[in-house]
Length: 88
Image (cartoon, rainbow, N blue to C red; front, side, top):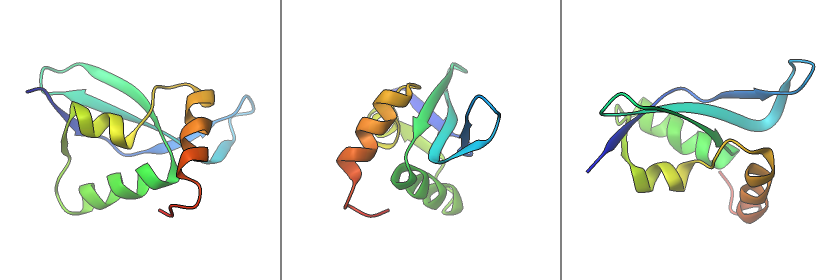
């Protein structure tokens, strides 16, 4: 099974290079060295930071899909809408 190592989430930036609140991007690396760029909501960021603080940076491909979305603002906004009301 392929495992991925989580990086630190950073703000997605707009055309003026200003951070967009609640929008984060993250790089994950597979155990074979492949790098993936993903977007993360506030909820996903909170879970990723908990994992990193607990010393658990390695996740499965399924967990990557649960914590992140493809790097597309429309997809990120859809995830944010689904997570609304769930809390971080």
